[in-house]
Length: 221
Ligand SMILES: CCCCCCCCCCCC(=O)SCCNC(=O)CCNC(=O)[C@H](O)C(C)(C)COP(=O)(O)OP(=O)(O)OC[C@H]1O[C@@H](n2cnc3c(N)ncnc32)[C@H](O)[C@@H]1OP(=O)(O)O
Image (cartoon, rainbow, N blue to C red; front, side):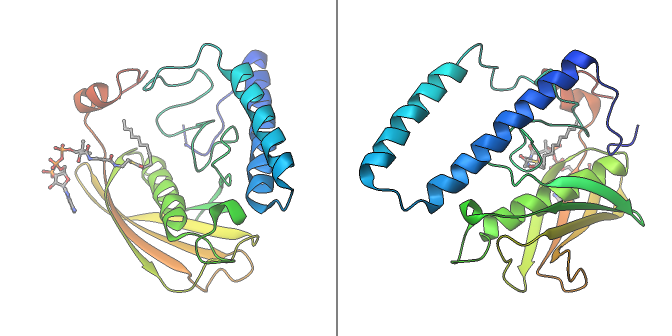
């Protein structure tokens, strides 16, 4: 199965993913509002109380640290709580893996003020996050899901916030379980103007090593 093909889901799984995504979207709106607000102090304190209430509401049967959620397809598929692609994550833009274009994986997203580095521009670490993820998808698409063992970035131009971005990655070389990957960030409006460029090395663990690293992995092959 291509990592870009959504797996067939039962109705219950679909409903669960839909509910997770709905909460994620509202949490992202809350995070963005919280980092932009000019509300008075008493409103911030009131909102803090409401946030404590929400936290208590959600602290029910929390999953274990290394547990793969039932809603996920791991490795190489849907991850609902990924800090990059996860529809359920308030940290994620979220980036959407959209197409495979001539062997390259393409993802799109828009960063908000919550992802700010220099005023008005994306944080350099957030660019690394986006590239690392899409480069990982390129490895999965090439049939070897793996972990980043080296990531080098060249920041050529600042990444503007609130502007649709296009993140691309392709595997350029394979040596056994090691893949060399090239990635870029540009805007969707000017895809040829590279803002950030990356070179990375990914390593696909052998099944035994994968089982040791990820005890709840369902299909290490
Ligand atoms: C089921 C999968 C799910 C994969 C799930 C992936 C989820 C995607 C998440 C997004 C990506 C991430 O954030 S990943 C998270 C960030 N990365 C990490 O935490 C990885 C931390 N690193 C590690 O734990 C370790 O390096 C391992 C387990 C990956 C590999 O350990 P190891 O097996 O001892 O590694 P080692 O022998 O030293 O190196 C492996 C091979 O890579 C080569 N190598 C090492 N460094 C380099 C290098 N800079 N450039 C070229 N090649 C290199 C070595 O020569 C060797 O080749 P040869 O002798 O075999 O030929």
